[in-house]
Image (cartoon, rainbow, N blue to C red):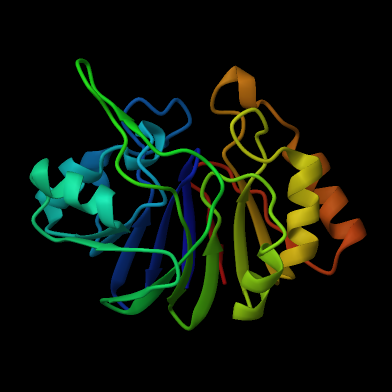
Length: 228
């Protein structure tokens, strides 16, 4: 399986001729190395409704016919925006998609979408345990540290993608505790350096992870791919 970092908290998974987009915030993302017009997707998985995670979901889904998987209220809202194949589910549930599945797990955050003239609050946030390409990858989404991450570790994670930016999510110190809870083979930090309030030093985070845990830390530049 290949994991490509698209910038901020957006990722592309590829395996066996299938592709999965996670939180495809590309337009307006100063760290993005590609555009919404250039990405392919069979499936789009969303963690929550914030604009920097929903991103270009509607346009990509309409162009590609991708299935969109999100929490129930967010999926309903996306359907009203013109997404034809939106599947809603909730914490604890598992949804199959072409080539894999995702299990919804908790995340501690907020969830809303802002337009020029509206402020919608469709549901709650989630994390995802994605089984795809023979690997299990945890996308924490935007979350603070919480002790039940120790239960998510029981999913036997090959990769854990976690935020380190602070201000809106965990910062590096709490993210280190999360790494110890999750016990993943590889940790990929995200949701940092996109905007001034979330400026961080990923190289220092990598050193801390690899000196204090058994996990390997892969710091990816936007556009860079990790083979798992």
